[in-house]
Image 1 (cartoon, one colour):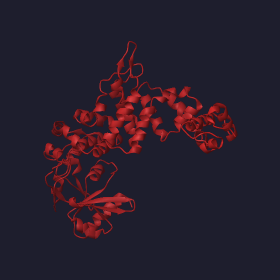
Image 2 (cartoon, helix red, strand yellow):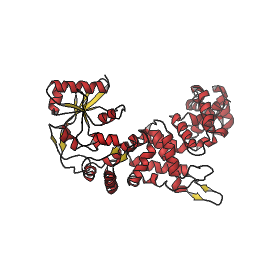
Image 3 (cartoon, helix red, strand yellow):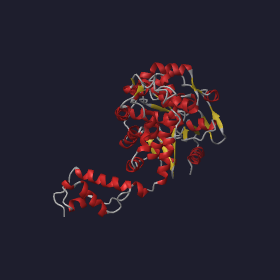
Image 4 (cartoon, helix red, strand yellow):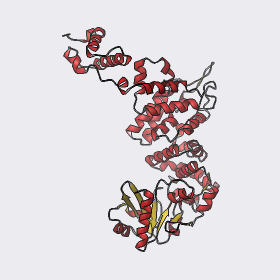
Length: 442
């Protein structure tokens, strides 16, 4: 069952038992914009216990807020009771809520007018209590009621406003934007994980450069990613970067990505984050000596601050650490090239290099070379079975220790180069190149 079908089935069941049941929020907004909804939500005057009685396999995921999660196969829909919110004391959640019977009361407590529309699936009628339909037609992001009050209630709404404006290509209402600039420092109180997830959505849901320009214009960027804001005005050598400074280049890179994974998007955002700290104007040209190493260190602090998972952080740091190595591809030894292209998720490295080139000098010859080589190399050619192991070395009298990795690396190098293809040849090479490493040779 699809989420849409499940939402309609839930609404039908609620109505058949005498309750109101309306589609609400993002799914209504997206339907009216002729966009495929990502999530489907139902709002009702039924209380959580009544919803659970009708859907006994459902889960109460927000007891205090009256939210029930109904699943069917891979589809899931949140069903929420109409409510008004009490006082927000922590910039995130209301202290208490009051269940309501009127959808108009529920609409007034939501964030933006375009997210407070209801649709009756029984007759297709749209219920609009806050002017959301006019704002959709005018392409405006507008906070409901007093903008300052809405943003003080939940500081994450500051970032959500930017995300919706970027993804939908909407303008932010002037009063709403004024409140965002005034309250921008409050975004620092938002949990790092929530900031990370919202920034990831801005990076991956479309028009990321527009999103980051809005973050900057609303005074948010300096509080969430000051290291990225530092890219502004950092000149680059025009012979390599005719497009402009590091900030301009980075935004171009982001916009050239097509539905990127979160790790690729963050790698693209931070690939040159070390340039501001390493900028040098020498007599011959502008230089960024050591910007990759500096970028890895700076990015490491950012990823820790935003509580990235270890797996995602490792991939993002690898993208930054390796993005300049492509320039040496034509001169790499066969073993070096094979090790380079067999990195985990190398398709992300390759794509970052492609858009990096297209966003600067436009030359993609290195990209084409590496891509072609990768396509012609078999899995066995990239990761051949080891010819010898540490056990083989021990059997021949070598003492276990740090030298083992050097020996095995040298053997694999020769194997990748195509100069070794048997264990006998490998052992002979070891005895020739590391004769003094053996306590005894049998």
